[in-house]
Length: 166
Picture (cartoon, rainbow, N blue to C red):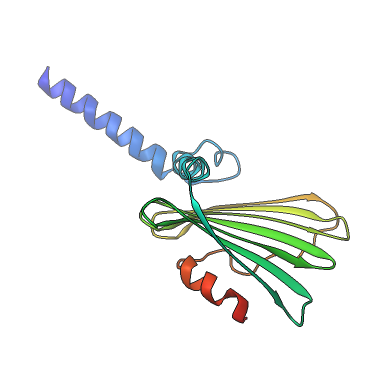
C-alpha cells in the first residue's frame, strides 16, 4: 500500500509539473497556471492600499506631456508603476506590476490615436523577468496608436526619477 501511495503521489506531482511546463499559447493563456499566478499579483496590487507619488512633465518642447506614478505598499515596496501621456494626436497609458519581492511580472498598455486606432497589450513575465506570453489586441482602427517603448522596467524607481530628463 505504501508503494502504491508513493507512486500515486509521484504521478500527481508529475502531472502538476507537466501542466505548469505546458507552453503558453493563444488557446491556453487565459487558463494557464502561470498566467493565473500573475493575475493574482495584479488583483492583490489593485486591491491594496498604496501610497502614490506623482511626477508630471512635458517633453519635446511641450509636444508630449507625461504623468508618472509610483505606487508603494505599507513596507515602501514598489508594487505598481504607471505612466500616461501623449501628444495632440495620441494617448497611451502603461502599467507595470511588481511582485512582493520587487520582480516585474506584468505590463498592461493601452493606446489610442486620432486615426481611430485603439490597442491593448498585455505582457506576462516569469519570476526572472523572462517573457511568458504577450497578448496584443487591435480593438479598432488601422493600427498605429503610438505607445511607450519600455514594456519592461526592472527598476521603476530609477525610471521614475529620470523620466522627465529624456
